[in-house]
Length: 314
Image 1 (cartoon, helix red, strand yellow):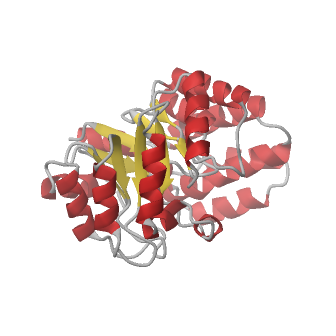
Image 2: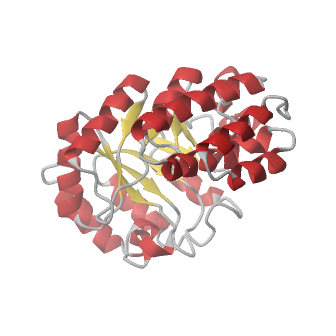
């Protein structure tokens, strides 16, 4: 149905450990974008290399994402990722967080097409790696969207991932299909659609309406239903047992215990995953509440052991 199904970059969830363990338990995801780095959270070369080693083991083509409006920082980080072995970077001009948009980064760059153009001009003078872009339609409106798309199409951008909402909308509200259709017209082979794909039916409707669309990105729908990409590939619902979810969970927990430091860091990461795991489990709200209350790994494991008696809703 689609050439590429991407895993979305979701901070606190889709880290290198998650991507590796996911690939061992589920399939049909062939590309992933790493949650962004910026000047305020710069990984060292050792961390980048360690993440690359995990990504290589996953077999998923993985693209580091950079959130910046500084061409030197963009080039420097692209060089660092190139040294580690990555083959592409992604520029984030989609992040809706006010913390970032107040600094004219993320989705705020859409409001300053001239700054974006200068950023890309400087990067492409001597690009360390091919560059793709993740994009929204604007901050409060799509007034600059066509101008930004025209700018992107004037450079050798490998792909454009579009979430057809404004930053103000966040992750809810009406999808702007007019902007999406303009982007699809401009980049029919390399456009990646992102937004509200929570079932294989959702993907099927999208493909039926836009048969030329070849690439999609899955975010919260995939975290809730890890088998979602498999369902889209096979065009059917795939029942998943609670045992399969628990095996996935146990592998994640084991890996986090090896790589993270301290119970709190491990618990915080696992609790973030249960926000989504719990949605498809009967009595999921009750389960999530008890998991969130657990203050130690011992209490957490006791909560999880109780989950095996529950069933998935569908």
